[in-house]
Length: 582
Ligand SMILES: [Zn+2]
Figure 1 (cartoon, rainbow, N blue to C red):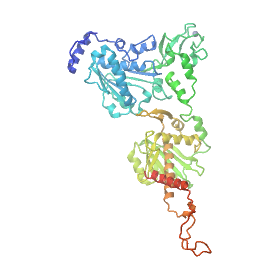
Figure 2: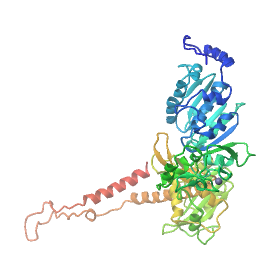
Figure 3: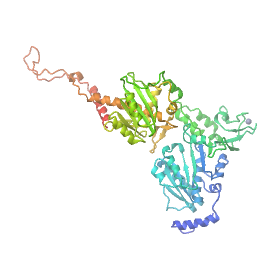
Figure 4: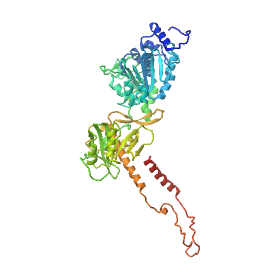
């Protein structure tokens, strides 16, 4: 490296560019590996003795699409950061690096990237000190690197990128991932790296890995010659706290191995990096963690240590739970029996609506009068009439105008539903004048799944195609919001239209109950005060005692009000009224 310590401060980008052009002739490392060797991470330099499985990742940098399903702390994030910086520096392209939240990105910019540049004399020589260095934009060599949080579509859309890194994939705002991917659309390069700790089966990085060529680190047993991947169940001897051969049970050396694809014909390269393939692993500590029992710890062991997806037993409905809610009946073609009837309609598109109609019983259970798909909004009035629906709730999006028109036709009986993100404001609010229901998405799905688990929502025996799958497509997990607060959210694992039709049907019932309650408390009722409080009637106008001639002045000392009960009653009524007219 040519030292430039003595040269005067570079003040303009063009001066820097000229210098970089000279450098390119002489000293720039051409391969990703050579480059990476000159760029130490805050945690140390590249160390293939410690992490032999990393070698393949550094060997090639041009693969269009790589997925890494990983445990924590094994240098994979460091690989992705180096890869991104290499593209900016050496190829002079625009890099987009996406994190879950803006908040993390600030730390990332300060502690990680700034430190990497500071610790590498090579990168220091290539990077302008102050001109273009802020937290969301780093100039590196002849290229630039944009850092973005996944929660802001506007921030994502402001960048046209050549290469993209999606870090902590499962924690990204999943709705905005397609926006991030589209930022590559105009580039001839268009390379992408996705990495992260897996969470649920069938979701995020676990799903991407399952669709990739699915590489696993294979090692050969020094004793019997068996070639094998390294897994918790086949290769960990829990008694001896050792990794052993799955065949001969002799100790297994994982430092020499190779990546083997399960599906070599597939385009996307996928790696599964578990702690079990790190030669220096403390097996004893890992065995200890495997014995933890709290749900958070069990999930952490699978996700963060083994790099495996994991689904706690109660995070989603199972086929058994759905079967248990079924009863021996089929849906009628119409209903006119006079009981309360509600309807929920989920709108996937103008031609695809999923509908649930329910008959409500006095004992608090409901059964289905109709569950099915209809091909247009025109069917909704027919269903309203055929089944004598009292109140309905319908998706306010994506066909807002059609939904509004339907609500206007049945004034006061049809509500438009809008979901809010978990933990924002009240659980459920009903705006009667505007026929709107606003519901916390997590609460709405919680209520729906609870109804099926507790067998209050009794399902017919022939269920429509896909119904059971849709109801299992929501898994409850603990997430962090943009401010780092933990909250429960449902991850969408597949098509879930019937689930939302059920949720809207439940919200229709909620709106009905609340309106009944409001009507009840608005009825003027006349009661005697003495029925509420222990107040003796005034004797004003009579004699104080039967045989006395003193007039009673109405004063009494026998006033014994149950003030607590009265305050409770007043508070309850105030709450109901406030809730109704919010
Ligand atoms: Zn063996």
